[in-house]
Each structure stands twice: as C-alpha cells, then as structure tokens.
Length: 250
Image (tube, rainbow, N blue to C red; front, top):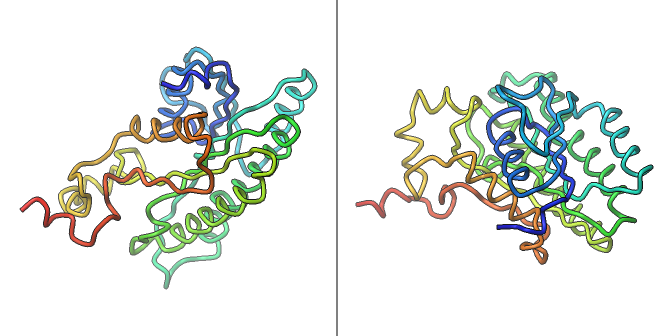
C-alpha cells in the first residue's frame, strides 16, 4: 500500500512484542529496512527479512548514537523513527511514589524526546523524515489508578505538537497515535477481569488488533500523509467520540 516505504530505513523502539512487533513486521512487509530496538530482544522467532535487532534501553542513547554515526559516515540516513517504547505502572495518586513518577516520565517523555531530538538533528540536513510517537487514549481520558501514566502521555501529545511546529522548516513531520483497547500482554489482565464492560465504551463494540494499529503507524510514516503533522491519531474504535456509544446499539 505504501511503495514509498520500500528501501527506507526505519527505527522502531519497544519492538519486542505486541504493537511494537507488529509495527516492525508491517514495515518489513512494506520493504523497509528496520532497526528494531528492545531491552530484552524479540519474542519467538526474530528472523524477519529486512530487520536488524538491537538490545538497548532507550534511556541510554549510546548504542543508537553509534548506529546513526555509522550511517552518517557511510553517507546514508534514517528516514523514520517510531517511538513505541513506554512503561506503565498502576499507582493510585494517593500512593504514587517518586519512583513511579521518575520511571514513567523518564521513559515515556524524557527518553522519547531525547531520541526524537537526536534523530531530528540527523534528519535536518538530509531532507527531513517522519517521527511517530505512541501516545494513548489515556492522554485524553485517564483511568483511575493510572493518573501518572496518563500525565506522561498528555505531555507526549503536547511535545508532539511542539516538535512538529519547530521542525517543520526541515520537512520533519511529527505525529502521534493513540491505541485503544488492544489485546496485548499489558492489557490482557484488565480484559480478563472486565472485557464486557470495557467494550461498552467503544463505539465499534470490539477490541482492536495490533495489526490495525501498525497500519495506522505506516500511514503516518508514509508519503501518503505528507501534509499531516502535529496530530494525534486515535485508533480506538470510537472510544472517545460520544458519551454514550452503547445507545446506538439499542
């Protein structure tokens, strides 16, 4: 669907499982050369054509710095960065600790920004590129027990807009995507407890798939969205569009 992605170099963080792994597969299937970043390495079979795996914590930029330095030394470039890595701790606000704040903001906001900044400096003299950030519907509609996590994603959505505006002169597009209720290792416990109630707030009355989220990311990274920057694309099945989505079902 996106022939312009063929041959482009793409970096995806948080690539080992769930949404991140399907994003890696989708770019590889489009013919891109993918650098897949994860702390533990991929789950299962990592032999995906066009994919190079790098074990790295995004809070420590040195391994990625070396990769970019190598590309620059060869006169090559990275075209796309997908900031998918993130952490979530359940913490009610009366009990939330400094460790909760530090870990979630350090990974979800500071590290994501520092990585985007480094890639933008790489893209600036090389004709631009695309940066796509993983936000969350929690940025708009927090859940009880996840207030700190929601604050990190709200900050990231705001940063996405600011980066998009400041880096537009160099043709660097920056967008975000907000997955809805997607069955992954992170969301499975909540789905096991109360899936029926969770579906009541989704207009399409179903969960989404990691492949559907990956398709949205490819759109934002491709030239098909060349006039789109600074947006946060909801991939939620209509979770946030009306107060009472269940009423449409009678």
